[in-house]
Structures are given as C-alpha cells and as structure tokens.
Length: 107
Image (cartoon, rainbow, N blue to C red; front, side, top):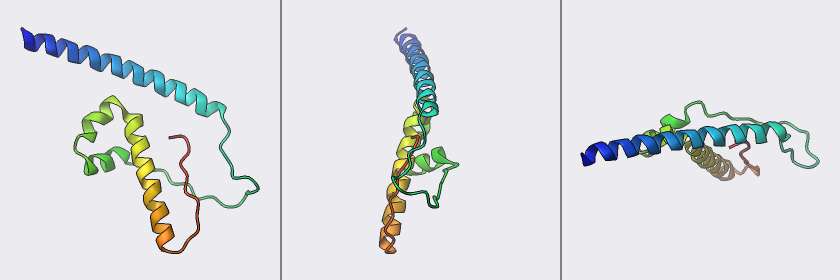
C-alpha cells in the first residue's frame, strides 16, 4: 500500500514539475523574443556563433544522473552545458594567447 502511495505521489510531483517547466519555457521564450540580441558597444564586427547540438549527451557523459534530470529540467541541463562549454572555450583561447570575450545568450 505504501509503495502505491509513493508511486502516486511521484507521478503527481513529476506532472507538477513538467507543467512548471513548460510555463518557465513559455515565459523564457516570450522574454527572449521581446529582447534584442545584446551587442557589444561600438562593435559591429564579425561574431562567431556556436550551437551545441547534443547538450544532453554531453551532460550524461559527465554525470549519469543528468539523463533523468534532463527529463524534468531540460533548460537547466542546457544552461549548465553551455556555461561549461563557454568556460572551456575561454580557457582554450586564453591558453593560445587570444584576447576574447566569451559570453552566452539566451541560456
């Protein structure tokens, strides 16, 4: 009987978290859609844009628990992957003597 109650509570919690994630994604899309892309002052030069096409695979490779977490909070996993990737890119560029500003947008 207790296991059935735990299962029902887990399903209910999962459903609530799923709805909250959808609301957060909708609000984020609305916010990002209303905001212009940030541009560095006085710079209209070339920009390199990188899109990570497999953020969940990368997250699972680092932490096996990221798979289940990605189902509940996918935006959080993407944010973590992009933040780490930006830090790694900045470190590699610095090691090569490149003076660059690495930022993430829309994460």
